[in-house]
Image (cartoon, rainbow over all chains, first blue to last red):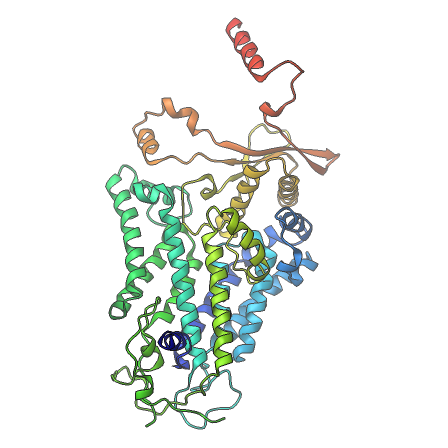
Length: 299
Length: 263
């Protein structure tokens, strides 16, 4: 029992250098910034005085879905002024940049998380898979954002510079890596399970339906027309690729191969479903799987 | 604050492979190997103090609760059971505010169901007989809201929410295009299967022609007071039109067929 407790403790709370968290923060915050910016062209359509989802209609939809308003609270429910939505998106982009640079440490990430939640709660019916994933990433990073990239080897969680240049290790860094790894793996596995619950993924037709939906970027319907072997091969190949990636990510000696295959899956998400931001979010999470190099200790 | 350093012996445990792959002692800093990645392996590290038992217990509880909730949300994604539904209801106070309630989001990429194919929004202007495509571009996240519209239409086709949304589309279209709208509808375009597509390519479409027609999910006429649109009147399906007592739909169909034969 003691061994089990120790293993659990080591798994979640082993100290890791804070610098290992920084690339995840930069990638996640950049995705968050692009996510905010991606709403800019559609604000006039969905929000504002003549928006499809103006607050009165959106409130009715909330009531229809029996979602208590407090669960999706956001200041944006109070106004239909288009400028407020544009301002929200612009500030969100700025916060993402500030957080990516590591300025403000936990506080800027906390502000970014609140800003993202405020937006996600208001746009509710426009959200897809990217929102839960990128919000979770940013949320985990609040525990330990890693060092700033523009202030040298200084922890962003501390207001005081280090007395020397020795790298900092913390259990929070290890916990963040573990949380992201676990979340990423569960999400990826759930996606594969969901795919395998559909008959078209077994019969090899899924690739055809993905392209026929009109949201994929490659391959086109014309490319696949009459090419049964290609359609079947790509469908089965994708499932094999996903299963291999899931497996190799948990095999220490094949970790880099697992990361490479997972990146291919992220690319496939963008190409085949048109959900580039979701693919980018998954790719950002993969930074957490990079093997952490052992650290020398002070004798 | 006092900083405690970890000795080699202290962390020299057998490698414990985790579900996410990193051996616990690797992450913790197994010092039995050296790596030449340019990282400050040889430098002294500032280690944090060890956590107390209560702190570890609290973190453990939080981690277990969080991932249990997330697993439940993901497992309920396709067709939640009664039990999953009840649990999700209880967990919604945690998952929804954090935007981790996956609801009907398509984790599976596609199952080739109607939900996976965005509906097309069409408008008929005053004085026109043809329908005009008014679907917002995919870049504006139309596929997401299309999925919601399809779900509501399949679940409650006479819901007032559908009319409300449709009316917003009408108002926006009139503002943008300065045209009066007579009717609005959204349709589920027919998506050809691989085999159907082959037949079409070979120009053997005769026997599947009926299947190629799009399905009208929602249709409504615009009610006006002068130039101002006041609201929508949904057009009901023929099968839902009230019939006189004692007359069944089968009777009506028989009469129609007889009339057609006579003509």
